[in-house]
View 1 (spheres, rainbow, N blue to C red):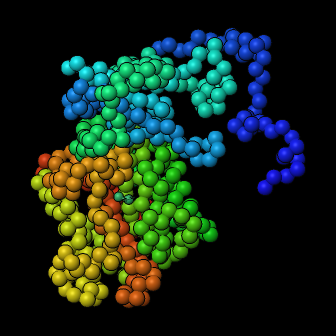
View 2 (cartoon, helix red, strand yellow):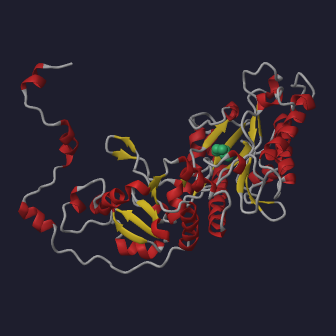
View 3 (cartoon, rainbow, N blue to C red):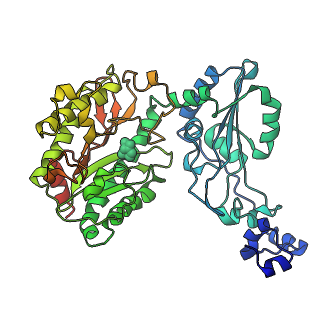
Length: 472
Ligand code: GLY
Ligand code: MN
Ligand code: MN
């Protein structure tokens, strides 16, 4: 709606209004003054990053799969939260995997792998530090050094990552001259390849996953300590959520995904991230959380804990049923087993347990038939997914490489069965309504089976109770 005064005044252009609050003087005198008397920047070169040799091998695999091409892997832009505020920056997983740059990545960087002419040339384009001879360092809140901190120089990043580096200013011309040969992540063949390249983790990745899981276990200890204070706060779930978050930021880069802190019947909402509910003595709390370390590898762990330290008989019964389902998967997981059989194994136990509870209209065996699956009413999600830089890693892999593939040493995935009895489920006895349990561990396939990377957290009901007693 227009007003008289709006119509009468010559308007300041809308694009220029964002700087109303922070005008910087720009007289030549001021520019000369602010641009002078600065010490020479530190020109020393960092040591090669420990991820660099691993990233080089991964890039070689990409180069060999796409010959006579210029493969462009974009880190991606910072994502706007609102106006001129952005979310914490996170590059594309493929960029993180193929450079090893981790949380120091400069937004908008692009990795180019040029395989034309039978040789491989790799160049990392990024926006390097602006000199003190430009206005950028003090006047640009998006990228200026005075605002966001120093960005590294081309020589520093080249030394760190073992890659040729060039200014992002050269990228447009480079892409223009390579135009007919370029291939980007929007190409399904490339997206698929770089996703499948992460199915088997190398030694660096396995070590990073161990770090992420160790930090997450500390996070769960903080969660255990938070339970009692949480019962005294009207939004107790937030007390639990933030206890974990403090560890994620202190020990890692961030969370790998939003924490689920689901007390009481909130546990039946699979992705309950609102976390504004009460935490009540006598109920369970399901906490699904993972620390992402600086290299972006993340854990994904769930524990379902009795808030006052002791399971009731009914809670314990359901908890142990879920644990049996998980244990059954642990027992069969080894190289050669099909990935899809992880879920099938858990489902056999879930069908049997729901039958024993008298919930199924047919036998467990009949329920397991393809067109029946009644037991799935109480566990609608899958049992396992690959885990790594993305919490649901390798998501663009082909079915034959993921679900229909055999397990291979070096794969890392979750085992996470659950049982969820919605509070309004008329098919279950009242005493079960509102109980939701999930137990989620992160495992590494070895030559002979799987190693539970998150085994330092208790899994059985007895062990959970004994562990919680340490924090009460
Ligand atoms: N936290 C998401 C998942 O468990 O897959
Ligand atoms: Mn998971
Ligand atoms: Mn999870």
